[in-house]
Length: 80
Image (cartoon, rainbow, N blue to C red; front, side):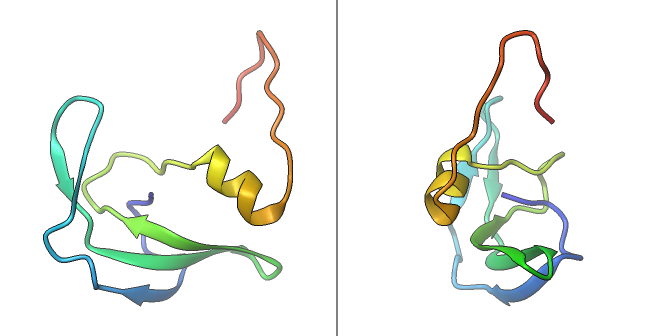
């Protein structure tokens, strides 16, 4: 999910009346679905556009399935 639109490649607004429930219990409307470009060779499709979020949220499961890769996390190290 993202709250910024400057990296959009395409955008669809077929999400009327769909909301997410944030961790604090507040519901936020999904205003569209987009493809985001991180670089010319790296894009992520089907990203939810939620402009009321305070930060971008990345699904590690979606990332690893989309790109057939592995994510490793190590105790005591930050991942940002």
